[in-house]
Image (cartoon, rainbow, N blue to C red; front, side, top):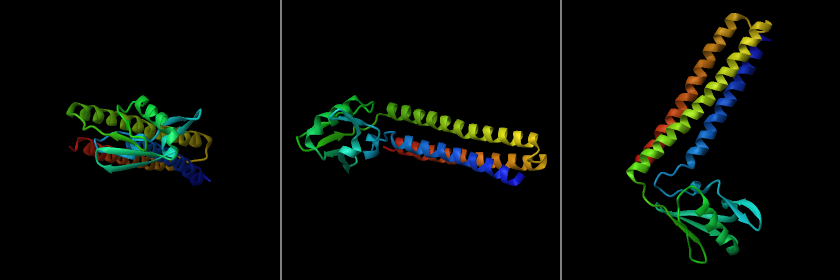
Amino acid sequence: MSSEDADLVFDEAKSAMEKSVRSLRVELQRVRTGRASASLLDGIQVDYYGTPTALNQLANLSTPDPRLIVVNPYDKGAMAGIEKAIMASDLGLTPSNDGKVVRIPIPPLTEERRKDLVKHVHRMAEDHKVGVREARRDALSMLKDLESEGAVPADDKRREEKRMQSLTDDYVKKIEEMIQQKEEEILQV
């Protein structure tokens, strides 16, 4: 029974750590790199006939070149709302409408803005590392409770603690690799 309980705790911690890494991956896709990417517009909600609707459900998003995103709405009546939602977002982009599509030019990033984005990405990484460490702390607490209940012997608890630390180190390393890759993308001119 003891190894089953310890495995459950380990699996729960691994799941929480994986969730933190997935969350970081999604957040990193939204960080602008100076190159056009349709994922920049993820999370933008358009007021479509009184209902907040995700932009990618109202239009086809494409990037014909590295400095331009083209939004081709399925319903041309939604164009004004799409433009308004993009202008209201915190992306700092200015869309232009020709009656058929909305074009969003992506201005090149300044050196100062690139450095700010790198700092922002590092803060995001630190927040997610904290999430991984919290999962480890919770797991270690559960192991301690199991030991005090007599469900896990002290030797097994120590072995599981080392296993948990190894898992934590692996997930922190994954986060650091993701951040390093994103930093290279941001600093690439």
